[in-house]
Image (cartoon, rainbow, N blue to C red):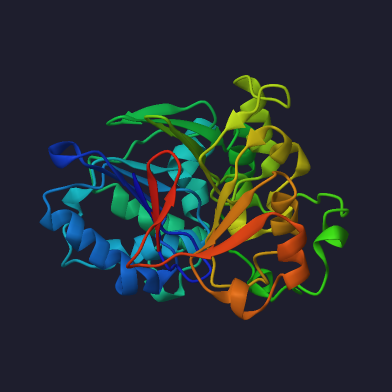
Length: 353
């Protein structure tokens, strides 16, 4: 299995490929920011099409700009055939409204549908994309939430987030444009030591779009991979508890994609206690929002006897987030992903940038 954590700036764009020959499958999770498509994603899609392969599943986790904008840009590109997409998961405005028996027309009237794409953010981008997806016959037009299951080739996929509570909150949020104030830079916590940060109490993310984020557990042959999007830790914990995982019966993972680009508000001691994992990947260029938080990374580092952190940008070394003493005291490594050479993870996983 090849997993590419594409350079999506402060966003997510993950391409997962597995199988051999005619059975080769591709799953795309999110598209990063707008320029991710032009700089990186388009080339990957061209390669897939040239080999006669498909995007067997496109998962759009939620409506935040740093996850959806690259997909919107792809659909704006009339030169690129969208027929390579076989199936799409996206919790759209209309689908959520129907699920909760809301008045779809009333919600539609609150949002301008014909705004120029470059000015669309979050809610408006979600509406734009929904209109484009409606032209395809591959969109799964039902709400995707906890306990939803699917199989793509040999890969079994179980949805852990969102739960219905998170979707109901988003149902009431669609008409509200994301405030520009949410884009203000956050103070970084790199000056603090691991020993200090692990003592801080968990404070959970309150973002409505993040609470509605799709998070999935993938099982491929002997490997388990947890891809958390921007999901809330408490929602994921409850989902894992319901399927039998707890402190005495931990979920063994080969790889975990850390939620919300390494935010301290999307990790919890409770989650780390019910999983057994030594490989964690973080997607961000660290240029916005002050992410990843060292607090998040610190709590991951002390959760296991051996931890490998993987990053798709080199800021972790350039900014000297960890001291030499911390590297020596705690058993962890920081690895920078590359485009020309993979990092091998036990279980047959090759991790790329």
